[in-house]
Image (cartoon, rainbow, N blue to C red; front, side, top):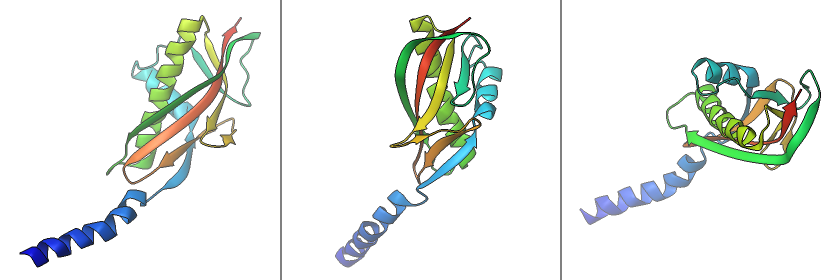
Length: 146
């Protein structure tokens, strides 16, 4: 019995590090798809608009708060990457919407993925996907657009 327990323990000891880091990768997904889905589901109320770096709102944008950062992670175990990444992004956007409202802003501009380095793209965001978790890190500015 002890040999069986010892053998199982050794197997878990050897396999666990590999499982913990399995599927660690960086993925890029369409930003607007997640925004549209969050708006349609009512998670975002539409009063705050979101603009990735490279896209500018029509009208004068007055920055209310610079260098706003948000990080969100979600369970990825057994789930598809686009689903978990969009979920994490939507959670980050909800947080940014709340911060914008508190600051008197109606737009979040110059949004970049900021996972240790800035990823600037006018259409896509960066998501880090692992065996257990998916996550996004964003940096942006809150602005009042007139």
